[in-house]
Image (tube, rainbow, N blue to C red):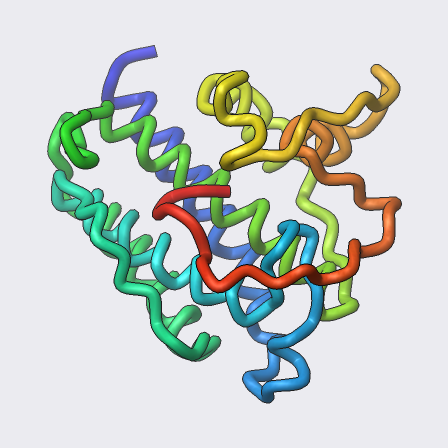
Length: 207
């Protein structure tokens, strides 16, 4: 696949990821009781997860211009309307002319890799939010199948622990969604773990 074709594929994935997650965000309330709900992300309540997502959307929008700042700009209060608006702005940014590589700190990555990473991040955290608000929304099977090789390429063994939970074992004949969630340490059949609290949403572009 050519570089152009890889980028077009990654942006198409991003479009589908944003469509999936925007629908979930439309059901989120900004009231404090709702924002204190537990999520599948250990140590994060819903408010912290949404704040992390807003920060990630800002970072990936910067990436469309060729560089991502590692300085956190996490809002004190999650704003779901701002999240929905930024999700639309993100796709618009990636639909314009883009550089071949994106600088992230002192590293660089092909633009297609960054766009695919954005699609993975947005999809999986959208699923996390749907679990937290009690409206489980399955990841479309085609989208999950397309994101499996992205996750395999992006999540290395050293990332287990600081950024991702250990991979879970699932039957070989499980759906692509189950395989994707298990690879990222999520079990959709398990109830949410008790919230333990964490004052930080962690590094940017983390899952």
